[in-house]
Image (cartoon, helix red, strand yellow):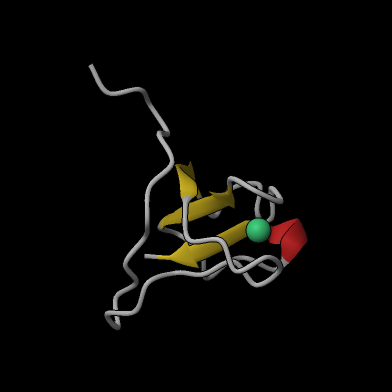
Length: 68
Ligand SMILES: [Zn+2]
């Protein structure tokens, strides 16, 4: 049985593999975070009414997140 959030390479919508900005690693844990208007206005994220896909670098733990 596959573990949740197993590190894996991430292909972005434009076809390139995601690479960590900080350490160039290409394996990420994936999380999907609900972005809903309620409660997000304090961050000026009214536009973010969809899920955010968050990829956490397995090496340096940097979060890369995308509005997919
Ligand atoms: Zn990294």
